[in-house]
Length: 145
Image 1: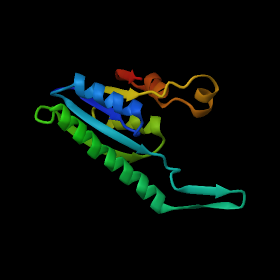
Image 2: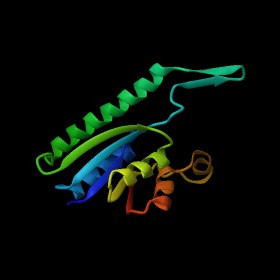
Image 3: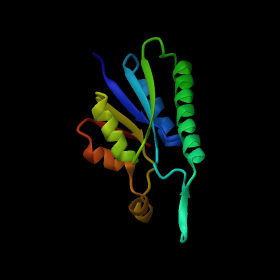
């Protein structure tokens, strides 16, 4: 059985660089792309309360499915689809936790992901999904910038 590589996609140039890295280095293996939809996507609030817009959440899921289609096109352009199994999934949850759970539940051997490279206050305030995955993953993680 070959290597199963997970590539989280958020549509950023960094996540596509990670996908391209996986395509170039794991031809003949299984590559799964994963888009994680934040559960707060579609929740709007103000001081008087808030509301949930299910259509916004559905659009976020559809956008994630489109990332899977784009990944298939890129893999086809690279000529690896005859030798490589390419899968795609869309999950809802907190990104780092969802990536780690997906990897554990699906027999992933390696995570390849992009990093936005934030530093200082931006990193403290926004957090780093890549850093959290690196610290908590029991499998190798490659971060591509």
